Length: 223
Image (cartoon, rainbow, N blue to C red; front, top):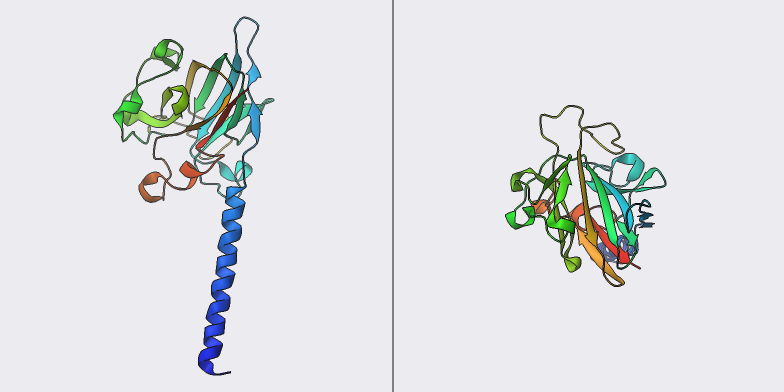
């Protein structure tokens, strides 16, 4: 076999190996889904269900060994935080959301999303104060369910705040507490996501965790 033929075989073999590795990576990515977490039953004096979430600047090695520096949502289940973005809530009910926001501000590129929409009363409660909008520059993340008309902007932790969380878990660190409620209708599966481009190190902040289930977007199953 000539030297040229040997080089050609080596190049073809390398291309096939790289192609196989890319195929395996895509297959793993496409078939990896977060755990489905059911909302807890609301207290006896209220209707519907409760959903407790938090946002963190970095998921950390405990919750994301493969991507510890990725920004992420977490959900409370049985007293423990779980990295999942797939939630189950009851149909034709009110979902009461409590969200602990541990990340700093990134700012919105579309100020329209600074308006609270689709919640009960058209408001959210930020650190005990009911508001119907926030300063677009103060937004850290959003919780948006487009098909349900729910748009909730989440203000970030001020830069000067002490004891800011580096990575999850973030218990005891500086945060904002945000609550809101929204109505569910009939049964269905609805996509939700964050619209603040907060993926540091990715083109325009929209790659990585912004496009991966289990981090900054997921599904709400109304059952």
